[in-house]
Each structure stands twice: as C-alpha cells, then as structure tokens.
Length: 417
Ligand code: GAL
Image (cartoon, rainbow, N blue to C red; front, side, top):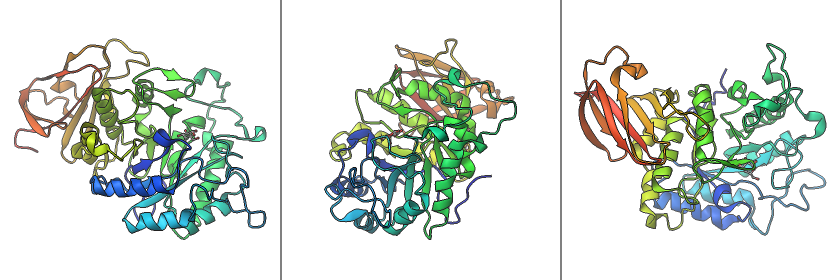
C-alpha cells in the first residue's frame, strides 16, 4: 500500500541536511546556501546527501498569511530574496530544497501551521520549487484530538482501544492525509516526511500517506536518558528494536535527524549512532554544522562511510536490519545489541556495546538468522568501518567492541559471494 512516486522519490531513505539540530530558529538564507556549497565541497553530495532542509521558523511570525490569497508569508529578514530564490540557487548546485510546516494551527515554534490551508500551502511550496516537506504535529485543536490518543513514549496513557480499531481512521491520520493529497495534486514531486512522533501508530498508515514517518519524540545528542520531550540514542534504538519492520522500499520509519557531530557524543557514540541509523534504513539527515567539518575529520569520515551508506541505500534489499539477540540485561539504556541485515554485498552484523566498559562480543554463525543451519562453513568477515577484511571465521565471530561503539561487519563466503 506504499505511496509510489513515479520518479523514484522516496524509494530509498532520504539523505540530506536539516537546520533544526544545530541552528534551531537561528536561520537565514546564507545558512542554507553555505550548507549546499559545503555538501558539494566536502564530497557529501556525491555520496548521496541531496536535500537541504529548512526546519521551523522560516515564515513571518507576526503577519503569517497574505490577507487576500492566504499564502504563507516568508520572514524577509531571514530570506530577503524569498524561498523561491533559495530553491533556485540550491537547484543550481544539483541539490534539492526542503521546507517545514505543521498539521496544526501553529508549528512547534509558534509560527503559522498548515491545518485547513493544505491546498494553499502545498501550492505555494510547489510554486517555490520545494522538493521535500517535513510536516510536524504541534498545536492540534481540541476538537481534532484522537478518539484513542496513542503516543509511543507514554503507552500507559492510551485509553482502552476496541479490538480491531484502525488507526488509519484517526484524526491524526486525517490531518496528515490532507496534506499528502494536496502535495500529490501539485505538478512537482515533493518528498513527504511525516513528523508525527509515532503518534496514532503512524507506522500503520504512514506508508500510504507519505515517504517517511517519525517514530518517536525529538532526538538530542546524548547516549541515553531523556530531557522532557527529547531523548538520547538508546531509548530510540530500543523502540526501533520492536518496530524496525515497518520500513521497506518506498516507506521508511524515521528515527529522527542525525546528531552525529553534536553535543558531547564520544567518537564511539557517534559511530554507533550513524551505524544504527544506516542499519535501520532511517533517513540520513545530517544535523551538524558543515562549515569546519573538514577539520573534524573523524566526524566527516563517519557521515561519509561509503559502506554504511551503501547498506542504507541498497537498491535490492529494502528491509531494515533487525535485532536477533539481547544481552541478558534489557532496559531503555540497554536495547537489543546484536543486529543483522542483508544487502547485495552480504550479511551484515551490527554489534553495539551498550555497556560502560569495552567488551568482547560473540556471535555463533548458526545463530545469525540468514545463516542458520550453515554454521559449519567458513566465512570471510569484513570491517565496514576500516574497509578491511578481518579474516576467515568458522563457528563463531568474536570482536572487541569499545564502550558505546558499534562493530559493523560484513559476512560473505570466503570467495566473496
Ligand atoms: C519538533 C520536531 C523537531 C523540530 C521542532 C521544531 O516537534 O520534532 O524535529 O522540527 O519541532 O520546532
């Protein structure tokens, strides 16, 4: 039931950059033009990062809409030449432009939302040359509250839901479908990214509504824990360990934009973050400052890891990696740590050390689901981080994994099949 765009948009997870994680509301045209240039200069465009996405706070907070046409008004102090001009300049570099709005009366930052203005706004975005819309979920009027509200972070607050209740009939779904229909009636393809935070079980109806759907509250650059509605990496991965399976070609669970390079994440934590987001087939939307990234070489190398990107963007195998083993302990800080996925290049293991110390991680070949019953053969194991082969293994693979790091391995037969 996926939304299939004839030009291929959304078949694979989106790749690009978004302003929110690093700049929040402190944005202007220059930020995006510089980002676009940096994507090219740093070689990230060639690796597939193509969307330059404006997040919240781009419109005129006071005047809001044209009194006659009802079109959204741009904040001229931030975008003096209008969004259409920004789009043009970004297109000139062979990149695409994304914008942000909200399925309520206001965005999360208090700017005008699109509820009730879906047609007008989709038409405006299309006429500006916008290629991607992130559609948020703030300021929903009381009368549009779902009959059975569901938020994944607070499942206990969900009222009893009648057996067989279909969340695609919820008002949340209706709010998102209204914009989806308006976008589809435009003369250009606009990648549609639902930012519904997992509410109303968006993973059950997101696929026929848009190209990707946010699954959880906001990410922040910390390993574990939460700060109000923002969360560290581990609780998000824990949720993904149970809901990895909604993603395939044409529709992707969005585990939120990357915090790689931000805050106090250690190098190992940055590696785990990128490896797991790639493994989950999440959109890969960079959220760090690109200027000066060349000096932060280890971070650039993580974001530019060709093998992980190739797994995320595999044209033959669309499914997310999945967990197959938990380490004794399990809570929101210690999610499943043994994951496996398949690509055209082999079977991939992602072994994430959630502990506070480095440790040995062991996997018996015959407990890896795609290799079950084939435990007696010899396998070539390749390290996706270094790009080098680790050697030939039989029976069991054992690797040392540093605190909060993730080993990313590729397994093939000895002759590379
Ligand atoms: C949140 C959203 C964030 C960001 C922010 C802007 O709701 O999840 O990703 O867009 O709003 O105000």
